[in-house]
Length: 381
Image (cartoon, rainbow, N blue to C red; front, side, top):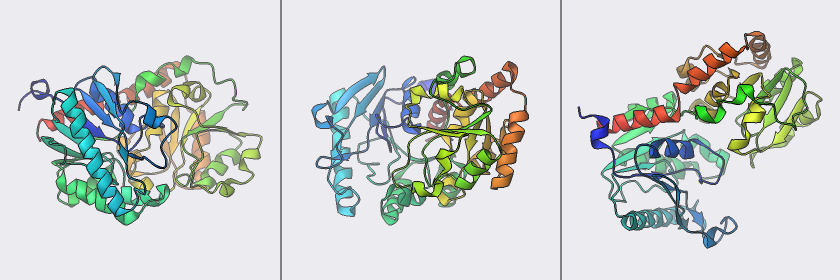
């Protein structure tokens, strides 16, 4: 087989599920890692030209350079994108805009990676190789984001049928598409070790008022978490630090009174680059997810990010956690056992050498490693 360097793509177009300016998820981090090897065009999800357009969106350039080898395209679509007809037109508009942008760049699309089933464009941009990045069970996600499940599932099937390769981010998702007959490769989410390398030496964020030891959660306060497990941690006498926004569809009433407890602090949303001082305050990182269909088919990014910061983890028994098979991740599946697992993790060694071992484990699962795996797999497509 030819070496990876001999057939690097001329351009990879990544049609993302997340806007570049939004919370820093897998899409943006994978694009950055990939752009170190090949030119990448990052395509934001289309926004309506009449509603939901961010302030100043129409006044800014649709195409702009983000860095060496990385360009961003921000297309505009029709209003009412949840309706099938509007979604079809928006898909056509996005594909047209991609083709137009690529022509202006003076190149061609070698690989198109599509991970947005609501408005799929795979096969419409003259690409030589087609990849469906199956990040999650999007059908199970539909209710969480307030869109039609049938439309989302139809988009998933459309992408899988057209793709030369399904890149699955989770063992459950890989199993699903492999059984369907699609050529499937498991390439889980990764982390950015450099972003968290200095955490063990940092002073904790000044607005953290809790006394140690501290168990911390980074992410959306929403329906994915099990409130009983959060309560169990606080009931065990451990301080609990929550960093992240409330999910817009989450009924915060299920945690009524919880945030008033003396050993619980919720600091709200923080940008990705602001996270290290908050992780520096944590002795244990939490992944207290329930066993919804969406969680079962997800890969919690925070798990590797905690480890990259040198922080042990207590997580529920999800397929992605089992696949990771990390000795620094305690698994517990009931509220009582979850609180006990946190106490046990707090008693484990937490010296400099141990934290370095945690960070070394995370480094083996970096986004750079995932990008290299992806490029190697492309050799066989």
